[in-house]
Length: 491
Image (cartoon, rainbow, N blue to C red; front, side, top):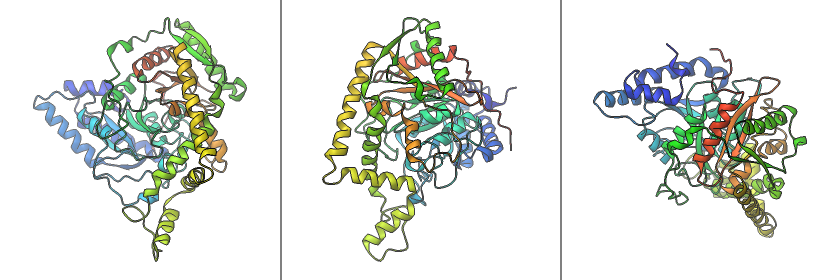
């Protein structure tokens, strides 16, 4: 019999619902896998072995009593450490939140529990979601399962690495400027950023409130869709939550690309891509044509300004959102608290890491008197222009296709001392956040060093079903198979 940890989420849920395997057996299989390989990858900050086992036993009792379990029955899931789970620590991989435990669960977690999922632990991340390599954690660095000398991407690097190494079949991440899609790309798995408002942000620790979205990381497109279906939908506790009905129906699973119009952006310069990335992207476009799609060239002139706009808007919102961490109400409190000013400055200086401090300072400067219009006001104006250009492009095509990242996973430590090079890792992912569009990253091929490369698809707002349909068609045509995973041996 195949090891349970090698099965997809939908296979596991089906077996548990039918009683062919117990939820406890599934949970124990994945916990054993974590114990065997996470010493090398370091995807998890903390595990809840006892809680996961108790949850699985409860599901088995409910099934034995005749209850029909949900779509994720018995499926282990990892949770990024900025999404609240009741009674679990919630640190955002930061010292500033040490000792804090969440008194409630995020809406997305509540819905996962209703669907029968089994949360097993929290995954590592760049502190407060600010990073593209998972090297900015206050605790330790996470390694890419394909090559442990490479980064897993960020900020949801722990979640992507955990899925790639088959320590869990599904994981939750959050995406502010590519933090689901870029690590999914580097780790050879599927990452989906839903439309802004499709998934409730209630219980997600805010980085940039107008950009953040919770989304799935999975081994393939169908598992990503399974997780999205469980967590999407309106939530009265989130004022930005859309009232639109759920997005997914059965028709998207036909994987038919015939007649589809796939947009190729004129502004993507082949010279800016590595040889392997350029070759993979061009091959991806040919794959679509072979499946009956038509490639249409479109233009988004403001694309070149996207990174600059993002790092103004996101940092301004971060400077406001992170002002709450002051050492008074919860989290880290300095011992040097002889005055209120000393309490604030000491707690924040000791609690925040260098990248978080950098972004708070940049955001505070851009919002300060005399600079607001020149930086934040101007950035928001260009953001609106970019949004309109993307919407106009999507009127001409069904999806936009572009590389997820300009390179494969880079070496650990390579960009730590060069923030600009790190920021440019997001050049193709930030447009979807700035426009609130759904975006899907999926493996396309391996480069000459055996590292995963990825294709990104952008869709129209709230048309996740159409996006997943195109993604499934590409997945079926691509050289990269969902069964390809890193050759990670037990340690």
